[in-house]
Length: 548
Image (cartoon, rainbow, N blue to C red; front, side, top):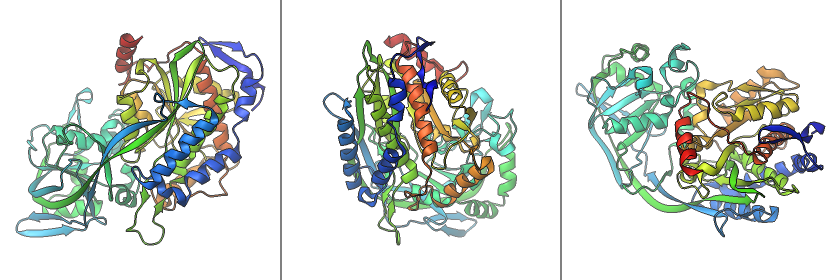
């Protein structure tokens, strides 16, 4: 970086920095150090970093030792780990989904045509002749005047739900958030709402563009061990069977019911949508093996000076999908891009901050969370059971997949416009001669798919930057093609491996930007907040009022 790093913020006011620390500290982060961290974490030795596995033991040991060598204090009392209680539920065999209508029966193959699981901690989950009801997008949103369950009783039945939300389907900017996915479009919400409505089962119709990933990702992500946080009621408030069905399976079910899926989908984009009883029943039986375990978040702390009881938090998820012995050939989900890059970046940032003398007034936390791939479980556990008070946590800065394609003219803020943290990014980016842009693929709902969201739900202002798309040499079209190629060929697959040809100079530039943002937060007395109208502001205001 250049001399522009010699600008600091105190109480939100630009002042000159004394000494060379702000020049030297970002310079301590190197491409070589970042690459070494990625190579290590994504190596076969770490076995895909699956939670509650030998790969986790190696990962946690590695991160703990790295934090210690960097000079971070244990972040949880005298320990570097926060125990995260998990339960793993694995469907045994390959149970089919049977659909019966008018005396005929169709069976759909597990893995290729449907996947199903239960979050209930039971050794057997079943659907037995459970009536199917098409409930459109499965959304109950009073603020949009929307209720897809109005006029129908789905108690004990199985609901069929479209992925994403009506705004994406119509591209109408006045419907929900138009092309930008809302939380109502996320599969997590749809299963939660189905349970609130009393459904016995819930099946989401997969469609690649609307989901943001191909069927292969559904198959790899929702087969094998499925982790949940261990809850007092053993998750008995969830529907008994959750699952996905392919688009082709949905068409076949609708045809037997005398309905047209495309016509039904079109009708679901209207506020006066009426749920459709399909006259078809489904059955399946899921035998499960259960295993309770403890995973770990890894936390390191760098104490501040005169405001040490206030915290700026950096985070990245260390986990991936581990090893699948049922696969032919390569069985290890190395997770190099997702998210060895972010975890290695977390270590580089920790080294940079540890080199500062003097240290910032606020404390820095470095949090490597578990079980992101299983539904943001590690970050949710920390956000709900914080080691340090939420009201004293200034901001959470998340890294999930760093730039491996080289320098960009821009940087992306996922959820741009939600919080006052945007201004910090804009200032730091401008000093690098870069611009800030919103998510180029808002329809994929990335805001709800990484660990910052767990903190946002608890009111903590959370920042998630992503690589820009305007490549310095190749431009935007080239970058978007690279993204599409990754999603199709490597996302959540064993082929996500470290590539020596990656250009990590862009990742380093992004880390330097994040360093600047964190440093300015750590040397300020300001508490950034959510902007008016966002769904998280009331929670933050409540926390601040009660905890400061």
